[in-house]
Image (cartoon, rainbow over all chains, first blue to last red; front, side, top):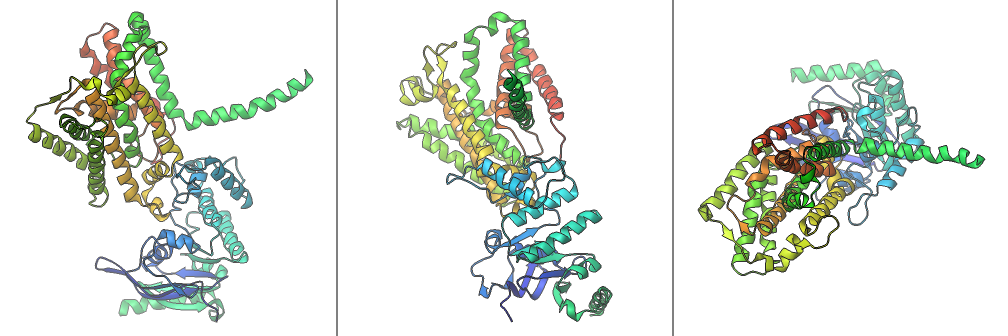
Length: 253
Length: 341
C-alpha cells in the first residue's frame, strides 16, 4: 500500500476538561475523496481545525507523506504542506474585496511588506476566469457583502484552488446552497480529484456523501468508529444504518 | 475629425469608470472632505475678513498636527474592532519622560527616545490586557487613562516644567519651527508638514502594507483571520503600540509648541480626537476605516472653534456646533454604504 498523504495517529484534543477528540487515527490517500460523517458534536469541526492548523493536537502524531511533523503545528505549516480548508462560515471578511479575501493572510508583498495590489488583482481575475466565475458583473474589487451565498462559497473555493492544494478540506460546503450551487460544489470536488488533489469533506447529507466519496470515516463522540471503502458498503442506506448502530451503542455504553 | 469622434468615447469611458470606482472606494473620505468644504464656505461667508486672513490658518495649524498624530493610529485601533481611551494619558506620560530628560540636560533629539519607548511600552501593556488577558478595550483603556494620569499626578504633585529656551534647540527648528516665505501663509508652522507626512505614512501602512490590511481583516472577522493564519492578538497589539508611538510624538510636539510640559498635557485630546475619527468616516464597528477621512475629521473639529468665534458667536456655542456637526456627519456617512456587521 502506498504512503498516505496525511495520517493522524492517536490524536487527542481536549479543551480544559472536555475531550473533543480521543485517540483519533485515520488517513487520507492521494487522489481520493473522503467523506467525514458524524452527528452534531461528534468532533468533526475540531478534527478539521486540527487538519487546518488552527488547533494543535493535545497529544498524538501527524504524519505527512510518511514524515512525522515535529515541533508544533499551525496554520502556516498546514498551508505549506498544501492543506487548504474551506470553512463552513467560509472564512470571509465581508467588508473587503474578493481579491483581498483570496489573499487573506498570504498577501503578495514586496520585501518591505508592501502589498502588490495590481498583482493580486490580476491573479484573482485570472483565477475567477479559470473556474468560470463570470456569471455576473463582478470584479476582484467587488465587496463580499454584495455576493450571494453560492458566490461567496465560490470565493472560498477559489482561495483553496489558488494555492494549489494537495488536500482540500471542506466543512459542510453545501449548507444553505441551492441545488444547482450544490451540484457545482460536487463537480468542483470531482475536478480537484481529477487534477490530482485529495478532498476531505464533511456532510450532513449521507446520501450526497455516498454518491461522491471514495471512502468514509465515521466519527462518534470524539472517536473514529469506522473507516470503510465505498466497495465495502452496499448503499447509502447501509451507511445510515451503521451510523444509527453506533449512536445506539454509544447511548448504552 | 472622424477618428477623433471614434476614439474619444473609448478613451473617456474607462477613465469615467475609474473615477466611479475611485469615488466608491473613497466615499467616506470624500464626504468628510465635502463637510469640511461646506463648513469653510459657511465660515468664510459669515466672516470673510477672518477666513481670508492667513494668520487665522497659521493659528489653527499650530495645534492641529498634535491631534493628527493620535488620530491616524486611532483609525487602526478602531478598524481592528477595538477602542483606545488611554491615549491622552500616554501623551502626558511620554512627554513627561521627554521633559524630564530635556530638563536633565539631554540632547533634545536623544530626549525623544525615552518618550517613544514609554509610548511603545504602554501600547504593549494595553494590547496585552485586551488580547491575552481578554479585557474589554473600552474599560481597560479607560482604566489605563486614569492610572497613567494618576502616576503623573503623584510624581509631579501638579507641577509643570517650562522650557523658555526651547526655541534655540535644533529639534524645535526641525519639528516645531516656522517656514518663512511659505506660499500664502508666511511663517508656516513646519509641524503641519510633519503631520501631513504622518498621515501619508499612515495611509500607506493602512491600505498598502500587510500590517494595515491585517488590521482591517481582523476587525472585520477575527475568526476568519485566525483560520487564515493571521495572528489576531499580535495584530491588535500592533495597533495599540502604534497609538502609543503616535501619542509619544504628539506629546513631544506639544511640549515643543507650548514650550511647557503640564501634568495635564494630552488631557484635552480625548473627545476631539475620537470625534475626528468618527466624523471623518471611520465606522465604529470595525473592519474598515479611512486614514485620510479621519484626518480631514481633525480639520473639521479644529476649524469649528475658530469658525464659531470668527462668525461673531461666543465660545459658548462651540460645543453645540461640535455636537451638531458630529451628528450630521454620521447621518451623512450612514448613506455611504450599509452596515454589514
